[in-house]
Image 1 (cartoon, helix red, strand yellow):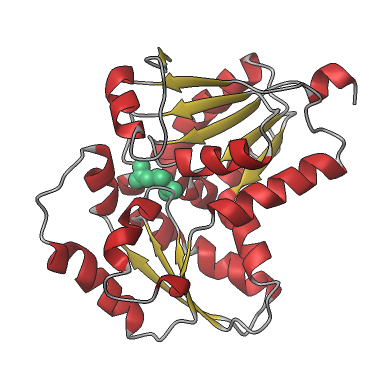
Image 2 (cartoon, protein in one colour):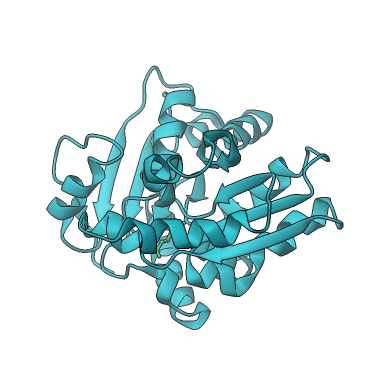
Length: 265
Ligand code: DGL
């Protein structure tokens, strides 16, 4: 691989601001990379869409990244990793990193884990992708999947006046009845809910996959001799609708100085 390809940007995609939880980790451990973040605010929430609806959407975003000549795309979206990754994975030259497949592989390296719960979008839960992927490394593992459909709207629409008992505690109580050793926050938006969740269960129970995922990607780029050689990196942001609103919502996770560019899908 020539050095100009090492210095090519890395694309990250999510339906909105949730994937910024992954971008933040990537910037902290790979600060020399150039990143292009795509928040598909026009089509969110993905969690309420079908696989059939999500395939053409993801294709458009991947075509956008192909035009930008990225060296890799981080599928920082559990829902598309669950529903469309298998459909698109062989159609592009760049490397694709799907969050569910990679995080499941890393987590099950610990063979002591035999009961895992996952909180995720409805589409991710319907796909049972976490169950399938976690079982690959440990066929005896028991997995409980809980959909939390109101959490993405809470983040993206900055809803604060919700009934915490109904919207947080009821989902969590279902999960706790299963007596999990760990609970995976299986949607990139969900780390925002962590400060509510820890009121009812110990912090150590929850896995925010962003750190594990970013570390795997860094190691893999290093193995493939694809880490950037630049002194420092940049980030470009694109949103498919209301870029200024995206910038405001992004503040939940990180500061974006200028209004993102509008990407027409
Ligand atoms: N944040 C995405 C995920 O990790 C999708 C959320 C949504 O748009 O429903 O699944």
